[in-house]
Image 1 (cartoon, each protein chain N blue to C red):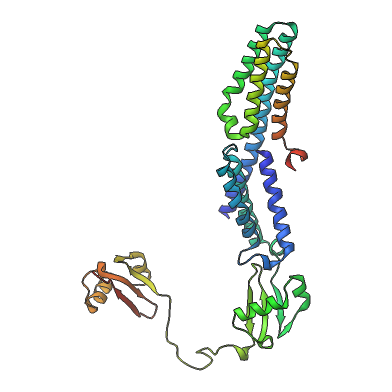
Image 2: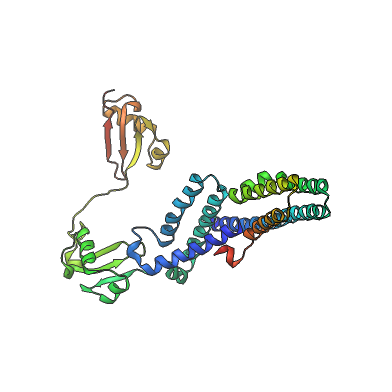
Length: 225
Length: 124
């Protein structure tokens, strides 16, 4: 039992250090500690499952220890910026004002081909149009074009885009979601009016009904009722 | 913050549990070893019946902890200890020299205790 706990600590922190040294590109949209836990937990659960000679505790104990380590580590890094930088690193600027930072590229073991591929993935084909390319701590590359290359917004064009807002689902597959109805600032009477306007008597005959912050309603009746 | 405290408390609880487990295994192997010692002393005197009785007592102590050892110890190590008990008992009943069987059983017991202790060798 003590050996299992001690070994889990050693493996967890060794893997964290190893992955930290390997660089961000290995992670693939996961934070470093999440990646380590995800990589370990699957195997830890599988071994006692397959080998009945091993006590189940040999699998459960490291999972619990990893779970605790992960929560403690993420909690600590949330409060201490230096600790966060130590464990998870800092975002790296691979392109600054249209110029590739070759030192950062080498540091992150990022090749030109990989950089170009990532840029293409994000719709940028010309490096000179990229103001910043930031390699995030979870291994993703965020590309920020020069202001002149960014799509114009309604505000820049002086257009009134009108109010938007998040659409709340009011009726889903015949069920009225009361919490969403209240959250949208509506009531049953409003819903009844909406249904009557669309020639529907009962919410059971509605497949989807949503309303956004501007009051726009999306309505889809159930088919084959 | 609550989650971090809960995780810290759980981690401490696991460490405390592990520490208590080591103490329990030490006590268990110690009691079984003492029974084994009495059995060997009787065997050295040529009193096979007393040796078998002391051995059965030691075996009973071990068997009482069957559930605990099944949950906390490797089944292979547990089974090899049971085999060593049976070998020793058979050797005594056949009237053979039991010294090797005693040594084997003692070694298995000590190994079991050593395995649970936090030492560089067992961790690495």
